[in-house]
Structures are given as structure tokens and as C-alpha cells.
Amino acid sequence: MASPADITAIIVTYNSQAVIQPCLAALKAEGVGRLVVDNASQDNTVSLAKQAGAVVVEAGANLGFGKANNLGVQQTTTDWVLFINPDAVVQPGSIARFIEAIGAYPEAGIFGPQILEADGRYFFQPRSFLATFLKSRVSGKIVPEGNCCVAALSGACMLMRRDLFLALGGFDPEIFLFYEDDDLCRKVADHGLPILYVHEAVVSHLRGQSSTANLKSMFLMRACQAWSRAYVAQKYGLPHHALPGLLVNGAKYLVAALSFNAKRRARYGGSFVGTLRALLGQPTPR
Image 1 (cartoon, rainbow, N blue to C red):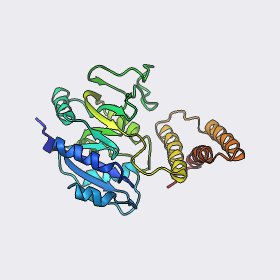
Image 2: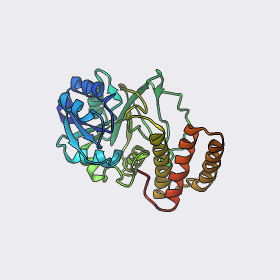
Image 3: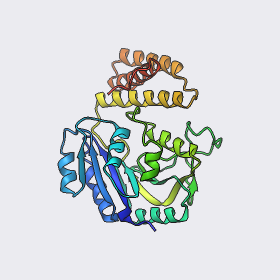
């Protein structure tokens, strides 16, 4: 039977000094290994992680979410890896619930917890646009009352066997940010393995607080999101409506520019640029 010592938590950071300490403290209390891959933070993230006793790998550049996690997996030797965001905190006993699920559902390919948002709502993802095998239209407001198979899991926290992760090629290195979790879950499903939601494993998630927010970062986040959605849709031969999205976001950007709304300019400008770069076959903005 697995134990906490068989699990290494991999935390990818980028200017995450405001949130990294609670994340690492909770993981330490659960008894799992902790490995931080830092994407060239300009704040005190690295020193705080080292003070907390975590193993720190300094990437030297911003590799993005997937590549940095892939690097982290290469540095681990445990049977299991737990991918967790720096703004996510595992609740007491959650690792034990994961271990129970590992024993009860040995056929599962990947496990995810119940996610509690900062406003007290529970986040549940009933479907993914990459999960074409699932036709259910269950509302995201309905949270399961027990363990169940799902279409996809949130990348805020996912548990997986290290050897399976490597066998599937890890996270797609072409994706800088967004949809890496959907893509990985699609690969697990295509491999014929269940994706399991573990109801009694709970993680608190301060969504969007893992790095400092400003207009530039908002632009880049929206650009990455738009690019990645178009990329994964093309990867699996799915409709992605990139051209209509390009026109809509271009129009919204012009309206925002005329109204001198900086936030809307960053938001819609980012979506426009990300979609355009994907259509032109160019890499995601960095």
C-alpha cells in the first residue's frame, strides 16, 4: 500500500512569495516530499521555499506550467507525483484520502480532489471540451457526494503515478499555460484509464493568486489562454471557432481602446493576439 513517503508534491512557482508558505506547510504536515520548480521569480519565492525545507530547482527562465512540471518529475524518484499550484493548500487528512483511493481504485490513471475556492464555493469540472467521449451536460453547480469518474481534473491539484506520467509523455511542452490539465486528462482517457475525483480529499485554492497581477500579466494570461485553447483543439481535430473569436475580440478591443478602459484593452487584446498567433502557427506569447 502507498504511503505519504511514496508521493512527491511538485509546485511550480513564479513570483509566488505571497502564497508559497501555506502551501508548503500544509504539504509538510501531510508527510509528502516537496519539490519546488521556480520559473525565474524576481521576488523572495526561492528563499522562502528553501527556508521551508523544500527541494528547489531553479529553472533559470520562465518555462511555463507544463515544462516546469516535466522538469520536476525528472528530479523525483517516488512512485507518485502530486502536481499542486503554489496558491493551493491541502486540507488535513487529504493525502490519506488520496492513498485510500489509490488502494480502492488501482485501475485509475489520475486522481483529483474536491477544490474549495476562496469565496467558499466548491469548484467542480463536469466536462471538458477535449472529452468528446462524454456527452453529459451536468451543471458545474452540482458537486458529487462521493468518489466518481470524471471527464477532466483541475491542474490546481492532480495525483498520478510517475511511470504512467512519463509513459504518456508528460505535459505537452508546446503549451506554456492553460489547458495542460485537459490535455493530460485526455491522454489518460485515450489510454483507457479512468480519471477519478476523490471527494474527501480537499484542497483550498486561491485562484489566480499564484503570481502578481498587473495589466501586462493580464494581457499575457489571456493571450496564453486563447492560444492554448486553439492549439489543443487543432491537436485533437476539434472545432475551435478561432476565426470568429478573433473578430469578436478584435471588435471588443477597439471599443475598449475608444473608451480608454485599460483592463478591457489588456483582456481582449490578449485574447486577440493569442488567437491570431495560434492561427498563424506561431508560438504562444511569453
